[in-house]
Image (cartoon, rainbow, N blue to C red):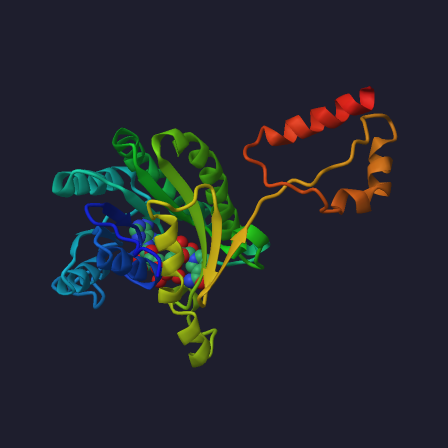
Length: 304
Ligand SMILES: NC(=O)c1ccc[n+]([C@@H]2O[C@H](COP(=O)([O-])OP(=O)(O)OC[C@H]3O[C@@H](n4cnc5c(N)ncnc54)[C@H](O)[C@@H]3O)[C@@H](O)[C@H]2O)c1
């Protein structure tokens, strides 16, 4: 039996944690000892001013199970409110070890029917929301010399999905954000990873059979998040998780073919398409520099 993953004396912020995946993440982190800021928009479920907001209900669940949690009603699209949320965590518990960027919503339409406002709203919540939250905890994590951050990406961004150009673009942008922050955070023991979940939540309502709904419960994704934010978790990894299956998605670079830049280079490239698409020798670049290095190595070799 492996050592249990625990988060005693650690503080975690989970955005969009009033329901779905975020709620499952917050409950698991708290059950494993973390003090949790449960963030979600502050609208009471039944619309009455007296009822608990979704974040408050999850806080109540955590406390009932003996854990520690506070609610935050900040919208992740509001940098000032995000800063207040982080200040509140610091005032209450004095540190922030884990940030799970999970909040978001959908505005699906084919690209020709999509308004720029719908595109921007999705980029604002998924990409900029994660940027604001990460920016607000980054220097705290640097000073602590410890931090674990998860960006919630999606198969829609990694592989494309009809009707989700806004969402796919925002979700893939999070992978780009992760790739650089993972490099910048490394020397401060800050690790940044992406989680691409599949779960039956409000986002997938009405599409699945009851049996599949059970398989796709958020609780079958959360173990992936727990590993990503653990002390010995990876860095710079895109973890896909759904129905208890976990896989890694990679951005790779093929070995490439040197064609040169002569007048017939475009035609030569077209003629060598099969070689270009051959995946033998493909690598997962450590950083962007790997591409120019490979290109120059081949060009120098061709020059002799
Ligand atoms: N469910 C899936 O299969 C799936 C697949 C890929 C990615 N995701 C991603 O996982 C994350 C969680 O999705 P879910 O399926 O649990 O959906 P969900 O709708 O149940 O949860 C998202 C939560 O984010 C909250 N939220 C929305 N805007 C917010 C804001 N501005 N500030 C704070 N909170 C806000 C919502 O109120 C909601 O509670 C999202 O980022 C989603 O894009 C989900």
